[in-house]
Amino acid sequence: MILTETSAERIRSLAAAQKAWFRTGATRPESFRRTMLRRLDAALTNWEDRLCDALWQDLHKSREEAVLTELSIIRREIRHHLHNLHEWMRPERRATPMKLLPARSRILFEPLGQALIVAPWNYPVQLLLNPLVGAISAGCTAVLKPSPHTPHVARVLEGLIGEIFDEEYVAVVQGGREVNTQLFGMRWDVIFFTGSPALGRVVMRAAAEHLTPVILELGGKSPCIVDRDADLRIAARRIAWGKTINAGQTCVAPDYLLIHSALRDAFVEAYARAVRQLHGEDPRKSPHYVRMVDERAFERVCGYLTQGKILFGGRTDAAERYIEPTLLGEVAPESPVMQEEIFGPVLPVLTFEERDEVVDFITAREKPLALYYFGPEESGREILRRTSSGGACLNDTIMHLVNDHLPFGGVGNSGMGRYHGRDSFESFSHRRAVLEVPGRFDLPFRYPPYRWFRWVRKML
View (spheres, one colour):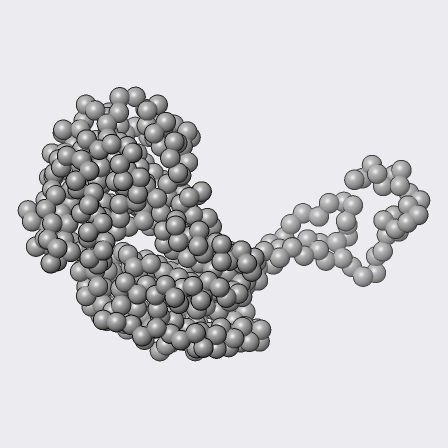
């Protein structure tokens, strides 16, 4: 399927209409925000079949995985916002120092304004609509840009949004790199972008022209550590799940494995068993095993298979864009598979003897979006204290995303800003500091000629 690109004239028209409508204040009332959140929730139910069909066409993603990793996450986010929105919108009282009395201090949460949300292809529904929940909750308008690499999903999302929202409030635009260039060159009140660090730099440079705040959800090489005292069966199962869900096309998937040398061979066997339990003897026949999004992604990930020794897996099928879950040993740290984010079901395996080696290896590289540790919790906490990452799990993978009360975001090269739950609301809001001073009181000490300066100075 080939999408029709939205024209430059229409994009400008949509942006102008949204700016004008936002100025009317229509998006600010709590009742309006709640109505729009409920409308989106209902649409996810009404459009579930169409969304699942589109995800199958574009990614070979099963209905079960589509619901678990895309639709249910958005619905849970909506419920969380509906439950807490009144409290989040309430002004925060802050202390007022004696020198400013009888004034009162507060923080007001006001919508930033017009948001641009640009989503990637790997979770094309969740990563477009989940940020939208935050924009709606905060009282913003939004222009949404789905990925052209999942055209069936992009078309369905355009229909869903067009059915439930007026375009001066929320609208979808379609297109590739040229449309992105135009969008990033325009002035927005906030840009939310999910994608690669390389594209994140492009977005940030463009946003700097207008001093537009950005939320960049990027990626990187997320390490997974299996220590000598780890439960190997649990570790292998949870790593295999985290690495093979969406065929490894997940920004927080384990990107490489650091395992104690004494466990490597046993882990390979345990990982093979875990993959068979999850996807059967031949994952190609599994209805729950996703394919590479396109030929380019297939060829790129296949290229990594030659950069080490295949310990498990390694079979491919170009006609289906299928790559078997693979463990890759004897990889050189300077090889492309250890320098680039893999975004596929290939997991390089490196060994270590002492934890200091692990810390040195991780901290010598860019800060990752996630870090995973399997072993004693106290040892894991020590690793966390000595490293940095956007998020982390001890004795699990990916599941930190499931907690609505935890922020999700990167650090350094893996991104900036965060969302989920209250953090989504605040990402699309401005925290406005307000000092309220009674009009009848006007103490003279702050005015020239400063007759009481000796006493006033003691208060400062």
